[in-house]
Amino acid sequence: MFGRRNRLQGRTDEQLLLMREAGLLVGRTLELLAAEVRPGMTTLELDRLAEDFIRSNGGIPNFQLVPGYSHTLCTSVNDEVVHGIPGARVLEAGDIVSVDCGAEVKGWNGDAAFTAVVGGREAGRPEDLALIDATEVSLYAGIAAMQVGGRLYAVGDAVEASIAAAAERDGLPYGVIDEYVGHGIGTEMHMDPQIPNYAVREAGPKLVDGFTGAIEPMITLGGSDTKVLSDDWTVVTLDGTRAAHWEHSVAVRQDGLWILTAVDGGKAALEAAGAAYAPLDATA
Image 1 (cartoon, rainbow, N blue to C red):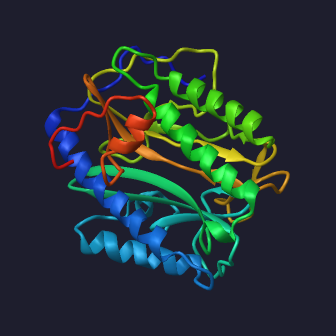
Image 2 (image 1 turned 60 degrees about the vertical axis):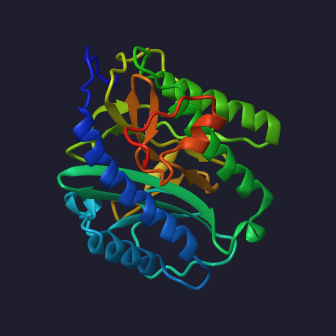
């Protein structure tokens, strides 16, 4: 279903350091946006902030390199899962917004996303806060499942197991989106292999030292069925329930993992998930 490539491509240390430049720019852009998002602003205002920051720091918004797409971000609000187009929509307190961002620097790419409550956590419904937290935890569970010599599709197994545990704990009917998946990343934003964010029967190819991929679970407060709106981009839940989306670009190294799009390299989150943190330099 997802292809049977016998061997994944690894990156050299030099290439990983270049990818870190792109990833760190994405991480810092998302950090800026998380601090700026507020009631009364439009999704297009967020997009302009992101483009200005990326370009002023030597990057190219790589979403704009996707044929037919002209924005820096995807901004998906409430029942929108992914690929929401920035525009005149005014964000309101209590909305949840998923912000997906990518940048290219020196020919290498980063891609990451977060979901937040507009107006801060105090403005959020309890079930929305639980959804956002469960999705973020499942992201790191999937990342922590990656190791040299292990199987790629262990990512989806770990994500689904994490969400199943969260559903039981929270008493909420979380749905795992299975129509959209993660992907390899490097000299292009979207590369082979596809990386399912849910359990599949196949084990997948073996992970190699230097492999880089984008892991991105998308979870709902209901069913997993979606539809695409008439703009041919925005994906919404079929049952109208809210959705969350978290993503990071990750490097798999012999000694552990390096989250290229996390400002701290993923140190705290990886240690919390029981995974080894293995940056290439002490300032990562």
